[in-house]
Length: 168
Image 1 (cartoon, rainbow, N blue to C red):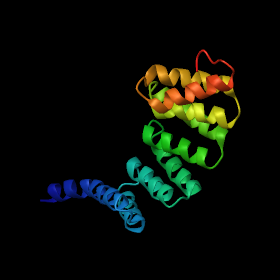
Image 2 (cartoon, rainbow, N blue to C red; image 1 turned 90 degrees about the vertical axis):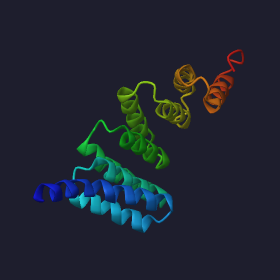
Image 3 (cartoon, rainbow, N blue to C red; image 1 turned 180 degrees about the vertical axis):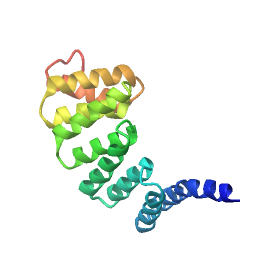
Image 4 (cartoon, rainbow, N blue to C red; image 1 turned 90 degrees about the horizontal axis):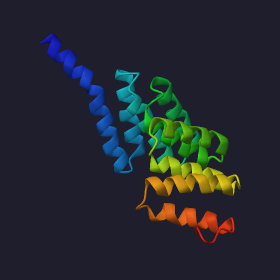
C-alpha cells in the first residue's frame, strides 16, 4: 500500500500540470498558475510546469515575468526546446533582439530544422535592419518549410528590399 501511495504521489505533479493546462486553455490564468505552482511544489525540477508558468505570464502580457519563468525551466533542463523557443519569443517581444537571436540560435542547435526558430532569426535580423542576414535566414527557412506561405512572403519581401527582384 505504501508503494502504491508513493507512485500516486509521484504522478500527482503531472495531474496538477495537466489541470493547469486545462485552466490556461479556458483563459483562467489564476487557477492555471495555482496548479502549476502545486506541480512544482511536488517536483521542483518539473521543467514543463516552469515553462507553463511562463505561458501564464505570456497570456497575461507580462513578457518579463514569462522570460523569468522560462529561464527557471532552462536552468533545470537547458535542452528543453519549448522553454528555449518561448524565451526567445519573450525576448523578441521585449525588444531584446540580441538575446532573442542567441536563444533562437540555441533552438536551431537543438533542432536544426525548427521552422519557428528559423523564422525568429529572420525576424530579429529584420528588426536589426540587417537585410542580408535576414535573407540568409529566410532562404534557409523556405528550404526547410517549403509549404510555409509566410516564409516565402518574408523571403520575397527581403529580396525585394535588397533590389534582387529576380529572387522576389
